[in-house]
Length: 423
Image 1 (tube, rainbow, N blue to C red):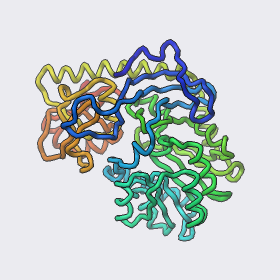
Image 2: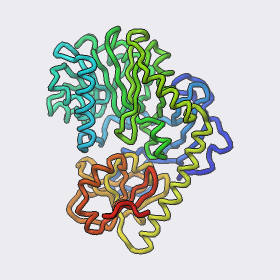
Image 3: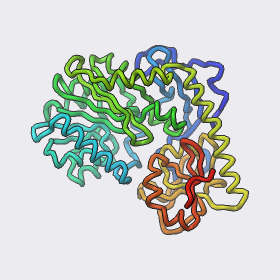
Image 4: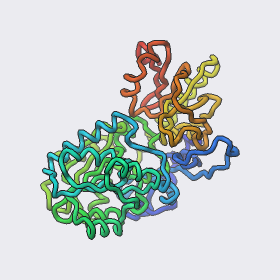
């Protein structure tokens, strides 16, 4: 479980920084030993038998990259994967808007190749169909890649790295645009991937990455976005340092609202694109907010402790009054929150999901069973996928109007009913 005192006195993690190699990564948040969040378990599995791994977060004093110190091998985490990106309207609409914007920015046409790294079920690449560009997805999960192929999105079932990029070049030629959404912080072979991107875009192509923004995590106390799949947590400063090591340059930067705030950067070989004012503007904003200072991250850890205390107070109040609480969805981030705070079936009786890959299993560690949506209702839902709260509120107005409640744990603990937030 979460240790609020860990990192307060200063502990250097026994690791080399994933970006710069410095051995100056200082612990600031220890979420305890946790199971792999997306490795859902059978309900009859004996308690405590799933593997647990340290979930510690540190700050590199040299390049400012925030990162976890323990790596679960990528083959264990991603070869069989229960997440499907096309399950929410919010994300599908985000991909539609983003593809239209990028197609216009880079004048994409039938001669151009778009490669998406970690392409999942092809939800993003499918949005390029109106522009006629050639597309290729690279997806490591053997159970998810066929979903993309079934919808007509060409997909390689591989891990992307330098060797994969060379094979794409040999078969398809260079890419006009390479993208990565929700995957760039997963990369165990980080430098091989960046070398592969460099080879694939050449002198004229562009790489566009969207990654959960560390600034948004700090603002929202979104500690639940920390889990073993997410090895790195980027600011503009730290991601710029990574690309600079490979002769690449960030020439445009912004924060887009998806997933509670994601950093979007556009990257090309150094000097190939004019650097836009947005880069200096965001860099200055990060400096003003202290994103390059360890004290900022220690303050974040203190905020997590305060959130912990408040959420447990609310859930125990429901328990004391005999009121039922179910989890609304079973996302990976939910496993981090539940296991960090020691929340199990005594407080949250079950989770309901529409993803059939999850139904019938249980959340690892917490062992909360996952059922399909069948019309039954609790008195309150704990909204684990809080980043899609607006979509859920629209969908569940009848439930709220009938007296149901949403317990929202992040960015602050709130109980939302028909009249809005009450706590």
